[in-house]
Length: 323
Image 1 (cartoon, rainbow, N blue to C red):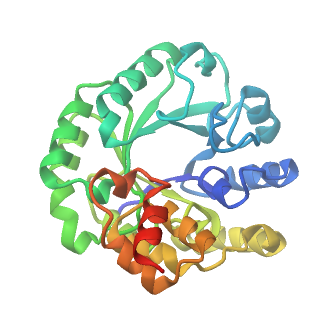
Image 2: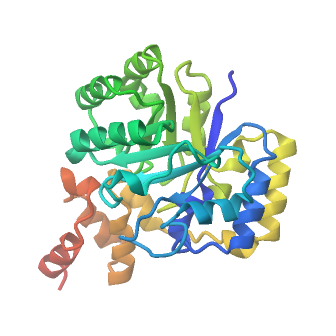
C-alpha cells in the first residue's frame, strides 16, 4: 500500500459552508497546521479572483491575501482553484512563478465547455509558468467512452496533474473502477500525476480512498478537515492521516468546534444517489419541498441539468405536480 499525497481543500471547498468568509487568524493557524502534517503536499486556500458567487476574500483571492495567510514563508505549497465558467479569462489577472507562495493552479470546467477549458488552461500554464491541474468534475455522469475521449484530449496538453472529481458523491469503485483504470494508466504513462476528489454524499468517500491506496495510478487525493465542503462534504483529512498527525487535527477541530459545525442534510444524500448537483438539494430545502416529493423530482432530472443547476427546473416541477 503506497502513500498518497494530499491536497487539503478545507478553506476552498469548505468555504461553501461559510460563504468563503474565514477569519484571517483562523486561516493562518490552519495553514500553519497543514505545513506540519505528513503527506499534505498542497494547501488549497480558495478561488482566485472570482466574484460570481461571493465577494468574500477566499472566493476572491489575490496575492496579498495569500501572503497574509502564509506569512510570506515562500513554501510554494499553496494551491488555488479557478472555475472556467466564473473565472477571469484575462491572463494577466493570474499569479506567475515570480511569486513564492502559490505552487499549483487548478482549473475545472464542465463537459459542455471542455475544449474551451482545455485551451484556456494551456494558455494559463504557458503564461504563469506554474504547474497546472486540469480537473474533470461531475465524473459519475461520464460513461466509459466519454471519459476515454476526454483523457485522449487531456494527454495532448502539458498539464502536471489530471484530477477526476466525484462531484455528486455517487461513485462506487467496486462497480465503476473499470471505467477509469485503463485511462488512468494512459495518463500516468504520459507523465501526468493523477488525482481524485472524493465527495461523501452517499458515504463512500473513505471506501473509495481505500481502493485508491492500492491503485498504482493514483498519486493524490483531496481532503478537508471534518469533510467540510459543498453539499455533504469530502473525504475527511483526519481519517487518512497517521495517528500522530490525526490527533493534531482533532485538537484543532476541538479548539474551533464552532467553525466545523456541519449539519446533516438528507436531501444531499438523495442528489448523490441520483448523481445530480446538490444545488437542487439546497433549493428544495429553501422551497419547503418534502423529502418524498424531492425524490420524485430527482427522478426527472436528465442530461446536462444533472450537472448544471437549472434554478427554474424544481420551481416548474413544483408548480406542475404539487398542489
